[in-house]
Length: 68
Image (cartoon, rainbow, N blue to C red; front, side):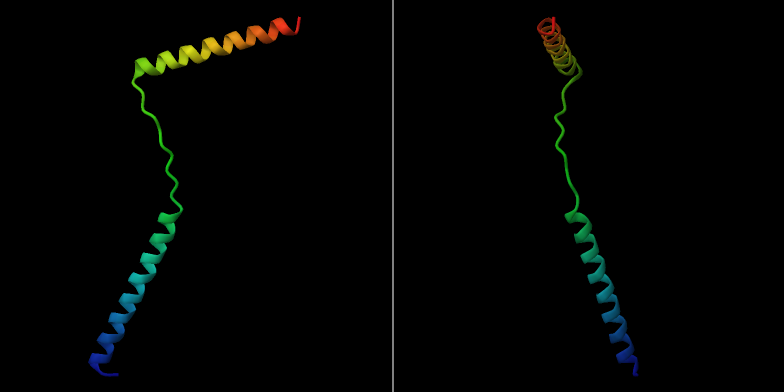
């Protein structure tokens, strides 16, 4: 094997490693799942929470009345 052949073999080995790394990265990237999150300020968040709690309490009262 000549010096030229040795350098060429090293180049192709490096190229093969890079190709393999790229394919592995692409495989990992394909499996990423993003979940969008709505960001609310604290005041709006508190209002929504209070509305949900009030609705839940009302539904609970209706259930209790219907079972009597």
